[in-house]
Length: 147
Image (cartoon, rainbow, N blue to C red; front, side, top):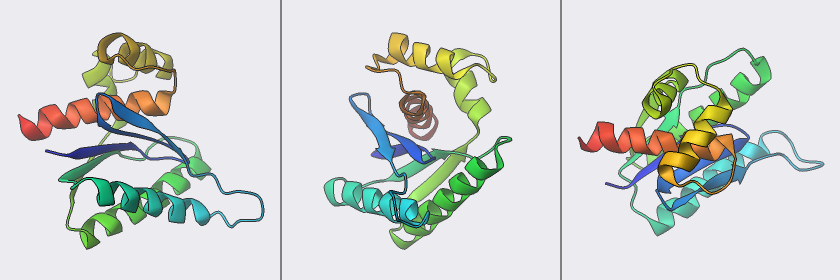
């Protein structure tokens, strides 16, 4: 089963398997509208879909206290759901607490602990918390969706 895991944000963590993960920088450039991040996100989805037949996309459900970040995440999720519906790809959201509990046993652990766990248990190279979240989300989805 080909699953794409996404930690939706302007710096969008993604993971396709234990060796294939990274971060997409969707930041608007100088003299661009903020909506350009949505075009960049959709282009990334199209790029992956050309290379791999996706069976499902899983993502971290937006939540938190930072109003502007929540708005951005909600916009990206809206584009994601529409894209999935148009391309007949199943999708599922997981809460940050579910992902953290799966990764560390603690549903409210720090970003640093998520990164450390990904480095130690998953062999993640680097120290980006967006990548770590996407890698753990991919692991959770594989377990959850494939049994």
